[in-house]
Image 1 (cartoon, rainbow, N blue to C red):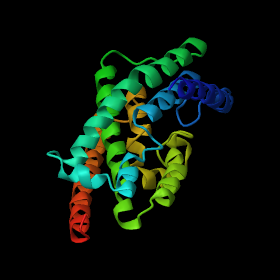
Image 2 (tube, rainbow, N blue to C red):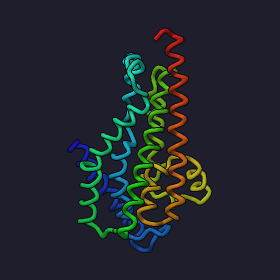
Image 3 (spheres, rainbow, N blue to C red):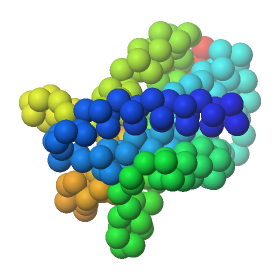
Length: 237
């Protein structure tokens, strides 16, 4: 955990240096130095909170067959995994979100929002977590059919940092590509909470967009799990 925090801070310093160099002469796409610093350090904290990469818990349980035991327990597997993910995210909020934010704000000029923005940012972050869990659940659930989802998850890991706005702000891209990305759930993971924090878009519109994808991917996971359970039952699991 602390090694991850150290790496998180180190990459935050590197990304801050690069983006400050890009906007130092003049704002780019509305980002000045304090805004781009807030963008970087919020992103560094959020990527651990929403667990942007590396969730293979369900995949491993499917691969080892332990998922059969899970399916016989008196719970709904998707809800149980989500409850577990909530606990992990709460722990990350203290050790992987707050420390990088404090460090970044002490070193660089930092954009702080008005007090009324904080509740909206917390709501946006919670919705980002639901969308992230839903996408990770769907990726892991492909193991029911593929038997090995490492290729699917690796492809997702490679693409998601760009598609969600972690690598650079989505506003840096051409307008047509921005429109394409905002038609997908990926900006809901990182860019949307940051936009709510920086008040770059109508905040309730962003929250509505996140709520739509949160319901959509969670419901899709419920349907996929139902079909997977039927497949396991047919195969004698």
